[in-house]
Length: 108
Image 1 (cartoon, rainbow, N blue to C red):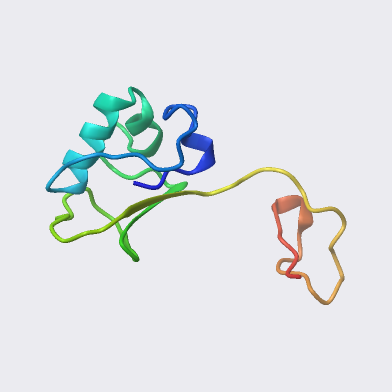
Image 2: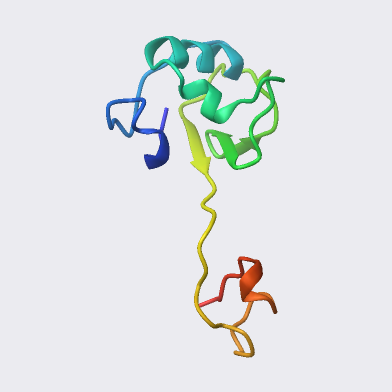
């Protein structure tokens, strides 16, 4: 399983870790046994993937933890980045949004 840098504090800075399970739910349970607390950073109390987390099995994004992992080669966790401001990008041609104060991103 590929671990993003914001979650590596749980894996002793390992970017890849081993975990086992027939479903994504089981794999994340095994991962949490090996690295306590990591699952809660990805999955909420209702067993839903947190909004800022994207999970991929091989190259397919998954929306539920019941996904079967038979034949899967890798699982990737992607964390969204948030916060900050990209300076004064209002009224430039490369503006993605009109309001920089509302977390815009300028295309480069």
